[in-house]
Image (cartoon, rainbow, N blue to C red; front, side, top):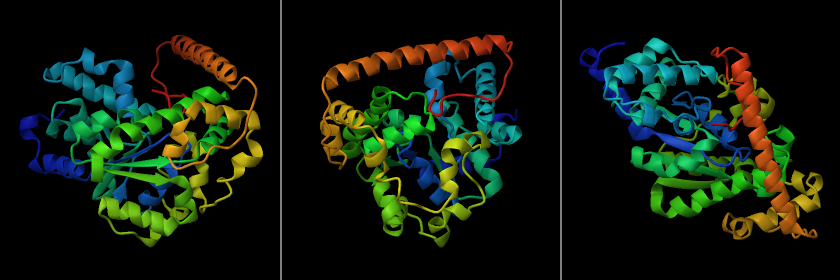
Length: 344
């Protein structure tokens, strides 16, 4: 790895530029985060990597507690672990370039994140870098502190449509309560951070994004201080997908023109009992985020939610046990990550 003393000043300047213009797209999975990413990615001056899940991985693996980045050996280990973790997720980034930027970055985990973004962005020549990982919705508080100039775009979608979409896409569980729980956590993030972040935070509804694409994208561009381009309005023609090939099953719709049929689909396809459970579980969150209750009812809705929550916990434990067993059976080899789309 290049030593910090010989790293060119331009690399450090590039990292600072990325930090000044950094933005995050957050929201519950299946709310339209990838659609907005695709629209912005269509402009060659903007780059967003596939989901890094970086800060969720730090928490899950306990790297902050295990390594002292002020120590040369731990810092070099951290750089290797970050690159390997992102490579296993399918992100295409030159290792030597990342190591070069890491040498110019602050010796912190948030500094290494900026170094990775700089390395990923370098081949594109993009001047603005963002990041989109739904799991980072739960890290907005710390991210806003790490990066005091960063902006946050929160995509929200009708919870009934989200739950239906998550179940149909096979996002970890076909149970109602575990999927509702994820939407509720995103709504709680809005409650906790929107006012505090002020002009660093923008709430965008999926419904507005697909029914009034130009006006909604204009508000996003104004928020980021960039120009709305025709390419953004034709995101399906973009050259770079913004997600690894193995994610195509649940992200392929972003390679198609915008369609509005998904807005009302839940009214025909979601079971009334499920709609009633969602209303009961979310309570005032639904109105706070701009949606009306479905009006569906079902007997013993509280008991149904409790049983769904317990079944979800059992399902989650079984999934973790299966992944651990597969890791052992593979002989501890480093292989591409095969995981729940929002794992880590």
